[in-house]
Image (cartoon, rainbow, N blue to C red; front, side):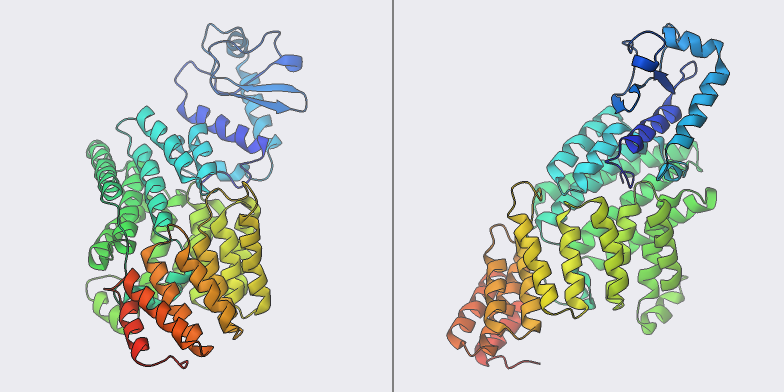
Length: 478
């Protein structure tokens, strides 16, 4: 992920410093050439890599100067100055500088990767994909470059399908029943091709060095991403579990080799929690083949990742909020989500999740107003890049239904279902819920219309089966 203070100039500069320090070649001095009013008397040479950052005392330029550079000549004659500048740079950068010291692939500090992540967490997936695609082209054969692009493509597709709505995963209902998705074959084929490519690239490196932690991490991350896609979109849980186990094994190996490779705790933490949360009969059965897990240990790993991770800390916080929500620890989850909103105030999903949590916490009309605020912000030009309004309308319907304002709730559900490009699964859920609210409000004719619309949107789904029952007998509540 981008650094927690990625919008801050010092954090961006620190990113570039570490990237150039970690990727420079012998003979290069990847520290600072202080130019302008604090210069050696010249502007940046043509050999300068990186960009400029307006500072309080002139212009600071990132440079990996070649030996022919005048600044480099000075550095070569004064190696102590190089070390001093490096130390001063680290000391001068408060806040997130410690995160940069965690072990990670040097590519994760590349300015283009950081820029792509800023687009990613504002849900500008096209902008993120374009930048990760460019980075992928610049680093052929590197599994991390391939995995970064794969990650962006998968989340772009999940968002298109309305499958990033956490309400869908807040209980075990998503594990059972028939659900409708509009899988894009072209997107699927590209996702699987990239996943295969990343694993091949990692395997090639691991054949040369079985302890290559960067390759192990990239392979494990890739496997976990493919697992997420086939479980959430194709709903192939058996295949997903096998991939998840392989991903966990890779990331566990990373942590055995390097306990400070904190990003690996995302996959291992999720695996620990999910297996630990299984009902006891399932735990008993899978325990015979050595599959064990612990909710407590899983959350502890995720919390550590959320504090010290480099590219997975936002995902760790997001998963923590989801798990806390499943456990009914809503106020703790709200605090986690608010910390994410402070970092990314224009991330539509984070803003929506706070409203979801306030609804689940029983805040009543305050939750209703939270959803209305999200919808109001979405109406402001440029506030959110791509707001899937159907998600907010559905949550608003749930909140109003909880207050027994059935007519308003039905209208909100119908807005969700009729929003342009709404995913099939959400459309079916919305029409069914609208029909039930119409029945509760004694509007049988409108209820029938909603049930018929639910069946038409997803005839082979479990909720369509429920809608058929509602056509036979009006809904009177649980």
